[in-house]
Length: 70
Image (cartoon, rainbow, N blue to C red; front, side, top):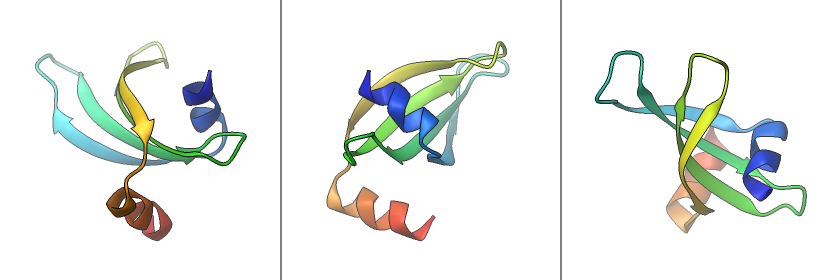
């Protein structure tokens, strides 16, 4: 899966809003796939070191610009 490639290829992270439950915070991942596609993902980091992906898509121009500055 391409989203797994993003997490393996040294993504850049930003913290998003606080989740609805204790220790459930939303994070953003900006990264590249093995085919050099730039993807943006929204996820919840779980206690067992896993990510629950909420959404993933290609970065828009604003996100590409932010990614290059992170």
